[in-house]
Image (cartoon, rainbow, N blue to C red):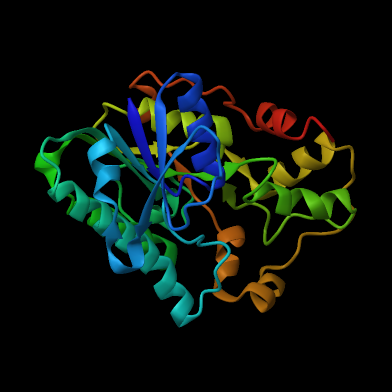
Length: 299
């Protein structure tokens, strides 16, 4: 198949691309700069801020995977920062939508990313049909999924939305930021330490998107084992042979440095992945220890 990925040069996009190429599929990326990021990937130019896209990209694709959007964890949550986070997601979907409207026949599948933050903080496991949150991450995800709902249905044979947990990778995302202080001897749980960390290994996350080709509906994508922030911190320390010497970092301290964005680490939720598993998906890394042992084995 020809698989077109928006946001392909990011951590998750690269892993999906590598897995697709190993399966002998063709991969293309929508890019704002026609620079070679991957020798075996076809590049198509787009400019989602102006809703412009190379129509050849849409016509080439059998499958479209959308990952485009500014990082909710990296951009400061100022008024302009929040708008940038939201606009980057909505405009990407709108741009793809405009291209699909001009296509003659439907694509085989569209898979769009969303986030488990859509449920808001919770101590109860959330299914896809459960109530949604009202904080900023939830609002972003709800608007994102609303945009997916406005894609031209007649031009898509199968459409799925993947509500993704925190993706663990050795080279990017949240894990290196947790590991580095622990390695330096100053790591500690944050807040109460009892908040849940909703997580998934990078390889499994990428595999979910490939598995979703041909599926319809919304799916939670998180690993089966439920862990807390404290459990994760201690497990990482044990894996890299370090000790946790300091008490938990109070939530108010993180709020001083991160503002409202501190809720990303001081609160959490649990999601039910049974709907995904009933489709036959099998996790390569179902438990936290096996995941971090794989990701941190060089330590």
